[in-house]
Image (cartoon, rainbow, N blue to C red; front, side):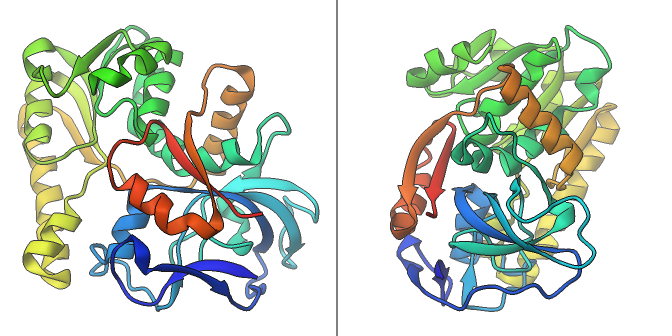
Length: 332
């Protein structure tokens, strides 16, 4: 099969597409998938650049890709939820080669069925970003309607889904983005769009119930001040890339852990649930998200689609920080 891999940590052009052996089932719960589409996420280029290497011990060369949509080719002896020919979607684990390939092997517990109404590209764009947004906001927003929510970077991969999830659960939603993306985020349901280049959101907003922090650093402290007592700040930024660059892989992990603990403690002192959210793959939640897309309650915005051969260009485009929604990789 053809796969995109890197032999050493580095920039986007460290990724090369070459022929490698087909993956094989090694565990009774394995599912062998013909990959139709994958998607890129910020964690992908952080892994490729080596900024996560203190925490994620990879055996190089490595095939990335943490979103997958495809068809089942083969199942392990203990697999009960899937059969050959089923269309599936989910999140491969980073410990094994991922979805930037024509085939991959994923544990059954990391997959759900792809609804027929979703294209493979839509299905590939949804899992990691959608589950991250879901776990930042729920079950908090399910407790009552009318909560005031700020989603930072509302035009991005996680952000554009978070805006819609919050609106679906009856929240009032503000979001930050560039002025060129105001029309997009308001079309997705945002009640207030704040231009981060010319406005200071912390001067515009207060008495918030929930903030989804996508920037980290000083923004987390501002979020803690803007959220009312009993509220929640869910951060999807650990700070590991900056800490790795400053202190090296090992001390970078320690500094990251101390930063996460300090953020949590700051929240406790202010009576706020301050959490750093690391996505957990929950097939039940992913199935619910997919059904919301089928129903039209949520739309998956795909900025651009690249063939597998252009994976390096896709990563370089992602690193510009100008993605609207998700970037998808066509693997077949």
